[in-house]
Length: 332
Image (tube, rainbow, N blue to C red):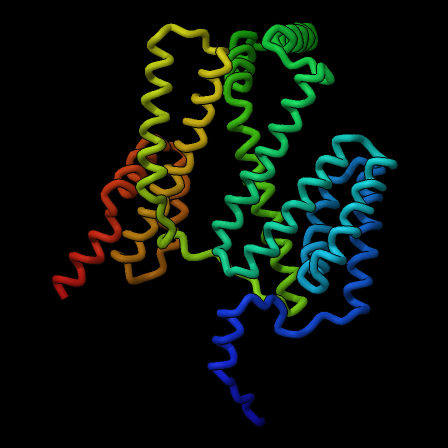
């Protein structure tokens, strides 16, 4: 069997360029993906399953953009957004607009060879702030009645209904759970969005890779590290939360809620950094398969999140992994 000769210089030049496709897309494939994008987006909006169809259609839109550029992409996106507005709700239209922006971001980040983790965090942030801005506009225009009083009325009525159905219901426990949800709803939403973004990115890159496109991959978790700047910002946010809390402000004060939720998001970021740090030392210290230890680490991170938060923060500030490798190099 004849071996295929690889031109390494040509391969390297391609990787260092801004090209996306190993093989030029055909006109028929671009047309097919365009029609599928329009049809699936409109059907999803009409049937109110646009969250699901957005995952399916995003790689199609990125493919079309990469193959034909903005002159083809912009009219296609505008046409689809307009038709979505005609057949469905404003929610579906806004969701479609957000995913058009995501297609642009993913395309340019692939083009300029950004890492998969960087793309994931950017996509999560864009979705989160897009939804936040949309909800803020709805509240300002009184389209949505979002106030502590309205939420409390809903909670009280729900608990009363559950108590009437099941008299043994622990009312105090229910009330405590709802209080936590009220306070940390933005954090909960952000975590759901990150999970959605992981699914969205992985499916998009899977489809693009099958179409001969160059796509980034996740780097090993042991190599993921949060920079010092974010660590200092985390410390600052923590101090702000402590100062506001000690001032005796109401727990539902908008400023306190904002910083408290921001603190919660940063906390889980540094818990993740702590997990990556432990993964690094597991791989450095064990020669055999370390799968069990990594699973145990993930479980421990959930059960003892505060400890992993501290580990992640210390690693970020003191560069534990870099120091270890430096000392290891000196000893060898």
